[in-house]
Length: 593
Ligand SMILES: Nc1ncnc2c1ncn2[C@@H]1O[C@H](COP(=O)(O)OP(=O)(O)OP(=O)(O)O)[C@@H](O)[C@H]1O
Image (cartoon, rainbow, N blue to C red; front, side):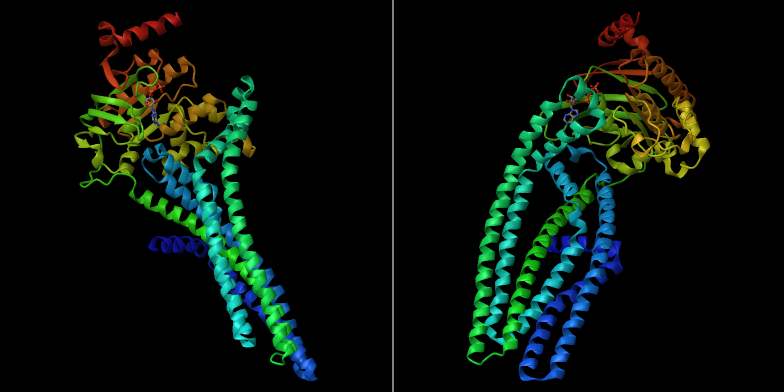
């Protein structure tokens, strides 16, 4: 219950934070709208009774009352519609930003390994409008209850039995909540399949997959698979929708019977002289009004319960984000510079939910100020090791020590401020060139000299100087900007990683796969020189590459094989003691000869 209340308060506060006065005005106009129906019905009663009694001035008052209520109805409807859209748009923007902050703010990548987490996130993304609709649903419910109260009071005045009509509304609400539960359960049960369906659609429609789709003629297969998966999702969801529709039909029949009964009762009372003709008009008007109010409260309570369900997911995410990540008992700041280096001591790691040990007893010393290359065949565990060093995941066993401080003690965010990284799966930031590079250090985003320095170190100067507005050129053809080649995007990602000038650890996990070997070689020669020149800072430069012409220039080469260290040493040492490295090196050199 406390969770539900928290979910409600959290999401309704979105509306009031995003558009406070619009939200207040929306609720006020909803209340006015709720009262106009009963006012018009009551005005009609007064008018008919006055006309029957020949009381002209009372009839006029009744008529004026109807006119005033109708005018109010039209004005309130107009302003209400305006408020509804203003609140929705602003709240949606705020809730989107909040979701981005929560999901992107989780330090670890480990949650992404759990299908349950991914399902919840997928549902939150899919139904995120519901977070914004809480204000609307609540305003609608308030309006329905006000309308319900006013109608019930007027009905009770004609005859107390008629109040039972109002009680039926509660049965309707219960039935709606059951129908709603069915839909929510079906949505959750099909979460994973729905994710697959969207994935297939994305592959089939995004430019990135376009080439392979055409070369391999995959479109038909994808469509077939999409069809199967869609059927699976829609069958389950449709079944739930049908069961919900059945429940709602039963509800409709009960309500219709009750309304017929109410009208029969007042006509019977009128015939016996215990009700006036105006009462008959009033009850007819109010039963119509009550059916509208019940439909409205059923609709809004359905919306409200649905929003509440999403809101609970949101609260779950909020809690998850707050509890995710490490909480060191004795936090330690990262050292200002490295004097000893980084040590891995008997590190083991297994991905969540996987049986396979990906890193098995890895121990090594990465000396301060050195350039270390990590090599090994596909799947050897190189990227996993990089991810542990970046604190995306925590080792299951052993430890990583940064100048003798256990990495577990260093708060992730503090460690990340002393990292720089370029990865094979880099992001194409389709913003301006300035932003695409400058996001790595927003304090220097307007510092052209710093940005050009990073571009130069990444060998990306011409990528930007060839652009029509230089750093301020918009990138990406979707925005009418300039499109870059794969290698150019990759060079910008490299420049981004080189904007930070004082990292303790700089990782380059195959960030140059889209560049030709000569360019990669020249670039890393420059990185190595820069790293050696700045040895006083002690930065460890860690490079993952499959190109041995690049790897050979490292001070230390570590060869991983099946998650274990097979050998390590300088190029000369490894060639003098031939094993896997020497074999792979010879193979590659022979291929280039
Ligand atoms: N997110 C993940 N969940 C489960 N297993 C994973 C995950 N990522 C990688 N693995 C597994 O861990 C092993 C090591 O993968 P890793 O990406 O570290 O290898 P790598 O040496 O970097 O390979 P490559 O040279 O192909 O990039 C592989 O067997 C892979 O299947």
